[in-house]
Image (spheres, rainbow, N blue to C red):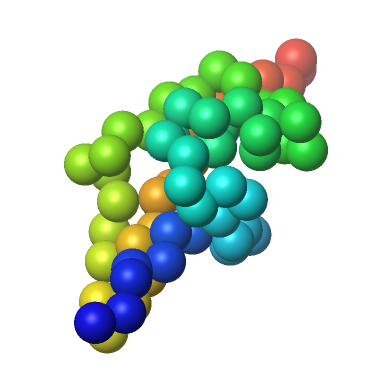
Length: 70
């Protein structure tokens, strides 16, 4: 049996897991270096959604809307 691959959705981008052996908190710390907007969000293990073929689990980071003065 093949292992399920974790992927992360940030906006429209799908990112491969940068640290497959790490927990979600550590992955978020790693991704925050490239995507600083993730610093103020949180994902949980139960947020993952399996794809139709059950080969990938995708975690979508909730992004805080950008505030615009106007």
